Length: 333
Image 1 (cartoon, rainbow, N blue to C red):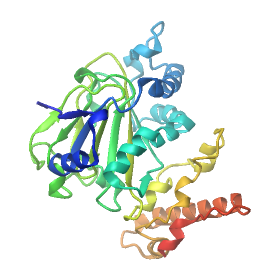
Image 2: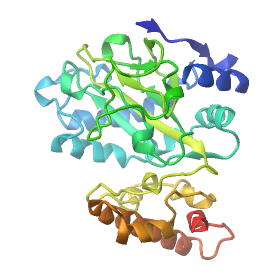
Image 3: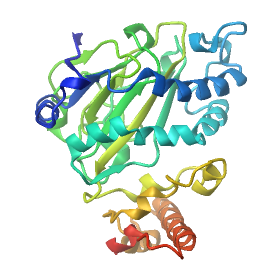
Image 4: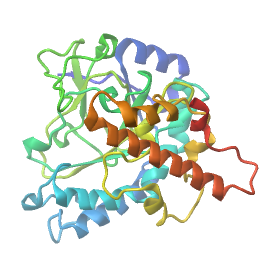
């Protein structure tokens, strides 16, 4: 497999980002983040993982040595319990707002930068084929406008045996590609693009790719749990799927419960301060909740609408004596 083409953070320009993204569908930037800024989040996650019994006893958490008898993944109840604790971490949500990430994404997206509020943590056990992330396009889940971007970054050095991502160059030029409707998985043998590329990605490096770029994980053949983050960004004037702001498929998860553990109010409902263009809009959601052709989708649309309306009410109450303008999404009706 070809190696990634990469550039040092100190050499990045807006023109380089645009040209590489247009021509390859990805950019790998080396040494963008100081490792010292990553380690606090890694340590918080490792504390949760260690308490769950996922690491070998008597080993250092920083070694991330997995107890394979505890192996689990996204669909397993025990994984969900651990992941919920990680998802509630204030630092987990603050990290996508790191100044270095905001600066580099503003060079690519422009000044109207929206950080999607639901980052994704990946905790991948080694030597477990069923947990390997297969080829897909992020636009399948992000929806909205096909002009958003993902940053993938490991929270530790990730040599090839630990399972970094691989990317199909130039695959973003072919639109949404044929996939399994139930899973979104794209068969590698039919995926359209040029060469697959991969290679070691270290803590502090960031891999940025278009939401139509086909990508997958390489198998984790090491003895270590791989811990990484996906963070998503777009121009806030472009269409945004409102499901990215709420929890339509989760039982019991809410921003109120997550925020109850936080020490700062700075990032709570931060997107409500932006004039977002939701697609579907609040008005369209109201109609879809009653008349969507697929009847199984009606409760989902209703849940999205209810949570958005609750957000707007909560934010307005909290700012009732402030001059801050909130409730941007209501402008899309």
